[in-house]
Image (cartoon, rainbow over all chains, first blue to last red; front, side):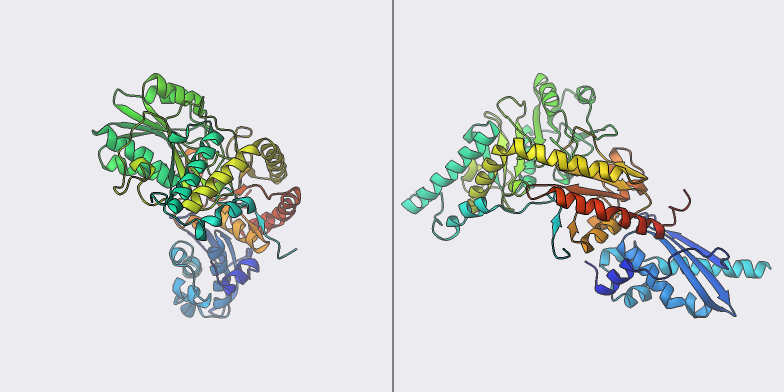
Amino acid sequence: MYNEIVVDHFSNPRNVGEIADADGVGETTSFKCGDMMKLYIKVKDGRIEDVRFQTYGCGAAIASSSMLTEMVRGKTLDEAMKITNENVAEELGGLPPVKMHCSNLAADALHEAIKDYRARHSAK
Amino acid sequence: MKNRLIYMDHGATTPVREEVLEAMLPFFKELYGNPSSLHSPGREVRRAVEEARGKTARSLGADPEEIYFTASGTEANNIALRGAAKQHGKPGHIITSSIEHHAVYEVCRDLEREGYRVTYLPVDQFGMVDPADLEKAITPDTFIISIMSANNEIGTLQPVRELGWIAKKHDILFHSDAVQVVGQLPVDLNELPVDFLSLSAHKFNGPKGVGALFMRKRTEVTPLYRGGSQEKKIRPGTENVPGIIGLSRAIELAVSEIPQKKEKLTALRDRLISGFLEIEEVILNGHPGLRLPGNVNVSFKHIEGESVLLSLDLEGVAVSSGSACSSGSEEPSHVLIAIGLDHSVAHGSIRFSLGLGSSEEDVDFVLGKIPGIVKRLREISPTYHKH
């Protein structure tokens, strides 16, 4: 049901974990199927220096979280804001149609993390 | 080791056993006559079909004339429920449980849209229907009650005898979807107070695409299809002869082996359950004792079921999951919700269903793999570290 890239990211997810002193944290939940993702970013000079995730969900949810972390490292915040869930699915070589809307939420979590960073930053 | 398949999804389907395949083969090429034909090739096949009906009936304590071959368990359920509703001829009341298989549940939903009233009886935390609830739900216009013999997901066995007697006392038809039970546990229709019982061959090492409906003498339904007079017009259409032969051979073998099989599978099941319960935050779904011999259903908290299924699949172990993600829908199983599980716990459920080929080595292999899989997935999970 999943292609090799998805299975690889599911079996060996990259960048799993928390960042204790994260500059931004984003969380997203799929009310449809209960998947939950939490994304932590570390920002330096306007670029994402480090990124970690935690995900509760199916194979597609875990693989898309992992893929997203690979995609955003080193990107500027503006570049990162432009990444969509569809971009993540493309990088994964496609996801089964049923998974597209319920388990492919990593980009949403990223956008939340960036918003969180910006809110904290402007408050300073 | 890597290439070996450990199949623990016998609740979904089972392999056709050698003896069954052998019995079926002549009916594809040599014995191809239409059992409705009057010539000798036709008559020869008719004899074989009637012998198959006899064997099937004997395996269940029924009369041959009470067995109607169908294309599936689903079709048997539809003929019984829709057929009885049509025969009833006016709006009325149906009672069923809240944990039926879709092949009953969706039929009831459909009948509701057509104007019938349906009561979905609740179940307790183990998935058991309370006979007192059935008694209370009966109204003067209740005409049929349908309660499954055992649940396909959590394996809970229902008190069918007791429920059937209540129906009989009130002169209401009683149907039981016994797809998961036939061939696993004894069914004696001589003494079981049911009017209809559905079964499916591929659940007991028979072929796919064939099932049967037991319909007690003097019970009447209006057929769903019109056509020829096969199966006494209850299920018109040329008989699936190889399938029927396969079903009868499979049921004969399965029923004769129930005592040994039950003992073996119960031991394997309990070994698997106690192994799983040694892991922290694991819940057994269904009844601890009153469950199908080969059924294990557990929820691993903080993990979504499909990710466990996928991890096991990568190790060569085939199981199924009650999570929305593996079924293609977005809601978790209605059965797990009916027994009171939280959505997140329901999403983490996995069914291991054992069968004829299952061995202690299989069970130990799975018990060896699961702790690592659960640990890895929990380490990824955002809910786990909060505990």
